[in-house]
Image (tube, rainbow, N blue to C red; front, side, top):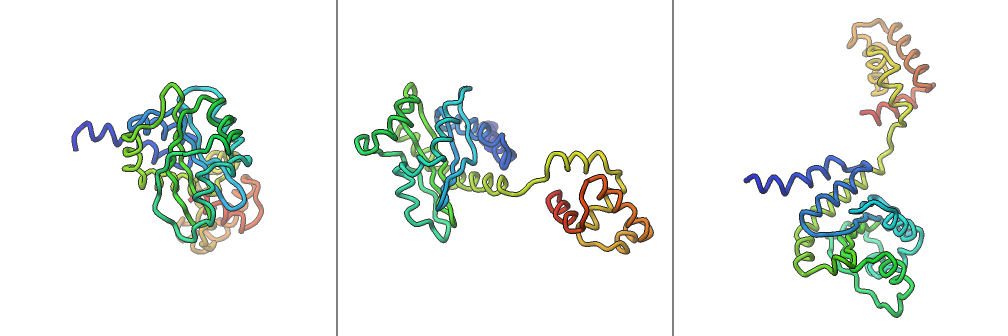
Length: 251
């Protein structure tokens, strides 16, 4: 692998690192810029009863992409021909990803076309569609009127990356859906607790008993209970169940 290969891989490595965070959209559009020229990219998950935005990024500052995406997931996604085609019956088993350019009947979809293409100056839309169990992911890339429509070469490039992009979108969505620890609790855990209180709380939360924790940390069971009580008080939680849930998230 030469230096050029590393230069091509690095942006997508940044995407992997950003998966599950608010930086994912920006890292993704930066990586895609090495393949094709796009104005916006949006990752939307369509479920049987609703749609939700998983990532959003734009080359330029401004709220156009955000406003359009909010309207889209707010209900207008139901007018999208690609959504009609790929979510008639949500797959019970994941299917291979598909790359599809939007072909729209401007007469029958006049209002949708006006709102999502004419008004914001969008010339074309290309989507990586990944049907899954109970939802369908649409990673859509948009070109402005100044850029023109996607070429056959652009479509072939995205098709070559389709499996990888679908896996990346799935990883980001899964990590984003995972419950997290609140900022307040996280700060308390790392700053308010002493190292000994933190060690005792983590071990007890993982299912250890006061006796086994004491043996591991060279403490008496009574001291373990004292450290536990101090830790719970500082964290503002009162039950063993809450401690177990917290340590599972922290782990």
